[in-house]
Length: 232
Ligand code: C5P
Image (cartoon, rainbow, N blue to C red):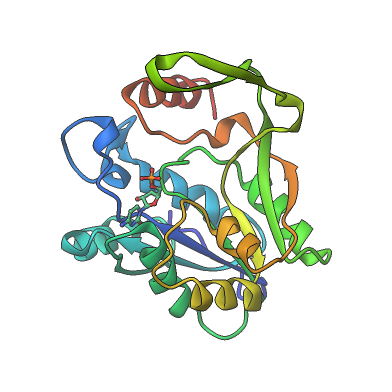
């Protein structure tokens, strides 16, 4: 059944899904790889659409797959699909430019985090609504972390208590994300909070979710299949 988005919601979600996904091995663009018979992107959009505050979803698709992605998502939720760019940042910028007037909170969410619970979407949005300009979901680092140099020789042990692993959705006050993207043209970073940090805007952490794992390698796909089978 097609989900309805909330016409009174204050959140737009941008989904950069235009990457090739080479680390998963050869095959289709990553967002279209199958997880339990459905593309990662379909799983991700279904969960975004289930979050109560979401008003708009904009997907940046691989340029050659825009029509296919539109057809794929039409039965899932009413989403805007447009061609992504050569870099993730260009895909996000294109999606951001397509957000209609209205939502003042913008979340950026990787399609590869296919099992992200709607509750995490809402908790990031709630922290922005509460007054933070930029919010990221994080997990603690559980392993010991070493810094290594040439020849894989250990230089030192990093204090992991000050480290966090960063997930998506990352949330922003709309004007803050727009300003960061216009200031950062041609200065690619792997996440949007990094752009905002460069503008001197404080970025606040909220607890992430193990279910928001990023499906990057074949092992992650197998793990995600197990989680889904167990009810995720
Ligand atoms: O490559 P990586 O896993 O870091 O990509 C993160 C997200 O950015 C993925 O959802 C991918 O599809 C997206 N992306 C994009 N446009 C690109 C490159 C990556 O939308 N040119």
